[in-house]
Length: 455
Ligand code: 4AD
Image (cartoon, rainbow, N blue to C red; front, top):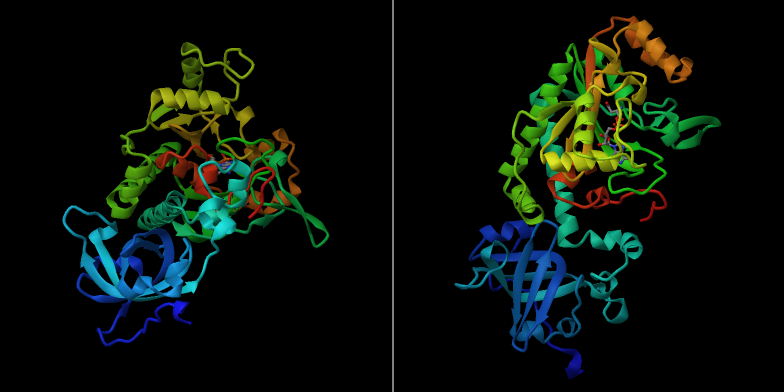
């Protein structure tokens, strides 16, 4: 029975402990606190144990000494167990460092949920050597790591910065449906499913719905999942991604370009001014610098010239000609060489969707723009939309799209048509640029791509 270890008593004779989240501890020097958290790291020494605790809000170092390391719980403590600790917050000693510059000297603690040790121990499940497919199966555990968690925290701050930017510009948030019966970006990437006996799809883009909200609400945006049945595995394609889309009414093409540039720069500035977000950028992308304004505005035809002058070839080894799509590899090579964001404008009509407005000076091209950034390539696709009813009907015909299911979209051109334009931004792609992630998969909580919908 003696081997049962010391039993600690959670009494408040040493003073009442304030229940806190870990991020609050740094400001509580001299106070008694009670914390519930996971054991992130664990270093037992003969006279004291150092535990780094994590509760998702921050990390804190704790020290256990005396009776605290003679309990049964202390004998086989494991990483990723949950614990409750009570102790006094102290500044760390001169010359030592710990998160927030403090440590908690613990006088009572217990295990809340014990994680396994031995062959099932957390440390053994995910290591630097774990192969990618097993790592993907263990995404729920990987999220506990500092890198994945900081990407997700940064993502939340970025979405918030966009929402602030929209709010400031009086652009209203709407929530269009994800289950739809029309396509926006062509039939080849539609996920189809049975909807009470009729055919429906997962949305590729909420653009058409945003357009219908303009007469009701003025400028609108949404941050919603889009779905693409991409049949290849690339660094920047997901089957489900978070699509930030906006639609602006009574504007010209130049207004769309100015809006995009100002919003993106403002979001970057907001993130750099946020102490936590800027620390994450500094850690994951130390050489990042806010892009200079104005962004380079490059006509598609000049981009084709650029590719040829710099010997950036097509996948089949031939030179690009006007009319060609610029593939992912060539686009990224050009963007990396130029080394800053580019607004690539005026794509050929034949490469683009049915709704895009023609360039008045050269109607075979469109008032369209892709924003390209180093390391990733395209992060935004946008355009002015066709305002004229007959031009829209010609667009449906050109793309072989049956008009009937689009009756609600066509009605926008009948009842008070307007000049308007908008864009879609791939949230994971923007994150991959800002945080220098090799693939967009690292920027999604649970990435979906060909062959993977687990966990
Ligand atoms: O260029 P896209 O296909 O444009 C549209 O869907 C328009 N209807 C948007 C609009 O104007 N409202 O997609 C827009 C952006 C791309 O620039 C890219 O950043 C992202 O969405 N995107 C993807 N991100 C991850 N995985 C995929 N499979 C993506 N496909 C597009």
